[in-house]
Length: 257
Ligand code: MF3
Ligand code: CO
Image (cartoon, rainbow, N blue to C red):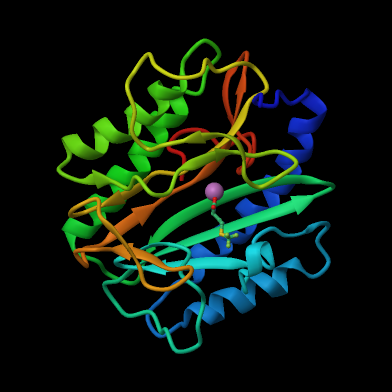
């Protein structure tokens, strides 16, 4: 199966979905504070969707119950919002959100500090976001998929962290998960060649400790050693002018989140 190449018109459609995703995540990020529950974030996101075109991409996907994934501390991905899970000062929460508008998808995530966090946790967030920046910078025609994964892995590991193997970035377009898979590790110069029009959700998941994953239940993936994990994601198109981050406004430049 081939990797889809999207036309300029299709990319604009994905960007429409991506701008809604960005707006909602930006508001959620600003809301995060001690005492708020992860279900409060879910309810806010749901309320923002009323009156928007399209629909939330995750709810109902393989039976997933919510519009957001909210993964706290040692939870890596797919944490399920709950009214019982109140955020506490010093924690970190990954908020992951996707939209489908007019048949096209966009997917993004940001990990947010709850109140004041330790310098150690801040470094984990910074390095993970930087690994996304570095990966995005490799999303250029002629580069290879391995260059992108290698950018994440090398930056994470140079900083003493590890990358998760069990979950990967993914092609995205008229489906949320499409070809190719994009592991957060890899060898520079290896793998499929990137071409104009390819769109990939790049999503480093970086663990402070070991890379091992434990499934707490059908959905929630957490670190086996209980140490924290961070997650940042953008939907990124390969264009002749370089990477185009579809999950934020065009005029935004600089660090990805
Ligand atoms: N951003 C996640 C991903 O890329 C969202 C999937 S959550 C699900 O896989 F609930 F929809 F599965
Ligand atoms: Co994704």
